[in-house]
Image (cartoon, rainbow, N blue to C red):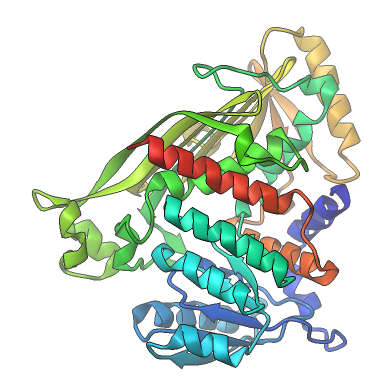
Length: 455
C-alpha cells in the first residue's frame, strides 16, 4: 500500500506532466472507456488527463438533452485548452434506448457512470452483468432498496471477474493523506481514542455549495440535482466520502463488515432555494413539476443536509454535511476533520483563517508535554520524508501547523485523474485490494442505517 501511496504522491507532485506520459505511442491500448448517461461533471473530470494505455476514442451513450451536451463541452474544453490539451475523441449515441444500445455494442471495457443517482444502481448492475468494469461516481445507491441492488452488483462483478469501484477523491487530498499517515506514528499520535457519542474519536464535517465554478466556468446543474428522489438526500450523498475516510483512516487496509457498524443518531434538514437561485444554477425560469412536493411558499426545500453519529467496531465517529446555495465572495467549500489520539489530536481546518484551503494541525491534548510532543512530531515527519519530501511544520500559537509544499496541492479536479489512474492499476493486476469491496459494502450499509434512522 505504501508503494501505491508513493506513486500517487509522485503523480500529484508532477500532475502537470501526468498526461504527457500518456501520449506515448509505445503503450498498447488495453482499456476503452464508455461514458453512460453523463449528468454530473465527474464523468468529464475522469478525462481531464490522458492515460498511457487508454484509447483516446470514448463511446458515449445517453438520452438527447442538455446534460450530455454540457458533458461534451467540458471534454472539448480539455481538448482545446492552451496548457497540455488532451486529445479525446467522443463517439456519441443519443436515443431513448441508450442503455440497451450500450450493452449490445460492448464498445469498451470500462463504463464510467456519473449522473442521475435514481438510475445509477441499475446502470451499475446491468453493466457488470454484461461483463463490463465499472467506475462509478458516488453515491452508488441512495435508498435501502438501491443498496440491496448494489450488493447484488458486487456479487455479479465477482462472478464475471470485473472490477466495480466508486470515485473516492478525498483520499488523495494531501492534508487528509498526511492526517492518516501521522495517525500511524505511535510516538506522536499514540493510539486512536475510543471516544463517546458526545465526543467522538473521529469527526468529519463538510460544507458545500450548489453554485460554484468547475474548470473555470459557472457550473450548470440539472434540475433533478435538486430532487432528493433522484439526487439522493445529503445523508446518503457527500457523506459517502466522509464515511469512506473514517474507515480508511481508522482501520487502514482492514476488511470491515456491516456487523461492525451501529448508527446511534441521525437527522436531516433542508436548504431553501429561491426561484432566482434555481435559475442561476439550472438556467430554468421555474421549478419543474416533479419538484412541486418540495416547494413551500414559493421556495424549494431541498433535504440536502444530514448528520449522524455511529460506532465502528469500538470507535465512535460523527459525520455532517451541509449544503448552502453559494459561498460568500472569496470563500468556498470547507472541511473539518478531527482524529483524537492518546498523545495528540490531528485536526484539519479549512476556514477563513486558512484562506479556505485545508490545513493540518497537530494539537496537544494535555497528555504529553509540549517539548516531548514537538520532538515526536519532528521525528514522525523525518520518517515520512522518503514519501513526502519537503513536508515540515511550524509552531502556530499552541498548535503545530503542518507545512505542505505547494507541489502537493494539485486541486480537487486533479484528484479524479488520480482515482482513475489508481483504478487502472487495479485493472492491470486484475484485482482490487482485499479490503476494498467489503469496505465499500460496509460504507453504504452505514449510510443506509443513518438514512432510515433520520426518519
